[in-house]
Image 1: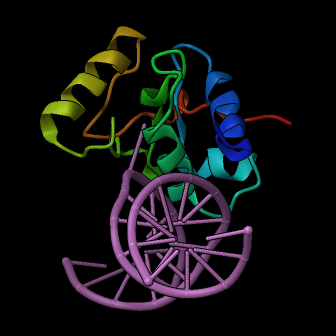
Image 2: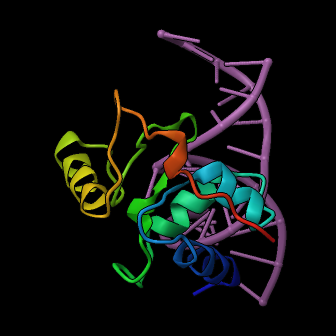
Length: 104
DNA sequence: TGGTTGACAGTCC
DNA sequence: CGGACTGCCAACC
């Protein structure tokens, strides 16, 4: 467990149910220039599903990846998880109203 | 023990 | 649409 991972998980948990955020927003919030670093931390997150990594999507509001994979079957599970929280994808994207913005 | 290399659930140009 | 760049981590000398 590194300090950086701890920050990422802590920030991810703050995402309220029924909303999602983007890798970029998350990276900016934790003052990290690279969103890949965030994805890498989420990929190996030891707190799943306590850390809702499915609530983190790509910028442009596309779904991105999940569980270290971009496979369509895995992404289908991510869709289902989000749908169970009331988040629906419109035309492969998440409506803006579902995007959670961090407030410092 | 410590510096370097490659990989990554992304983003920008 | 392809390539470059980003920061962090793990593996490898």
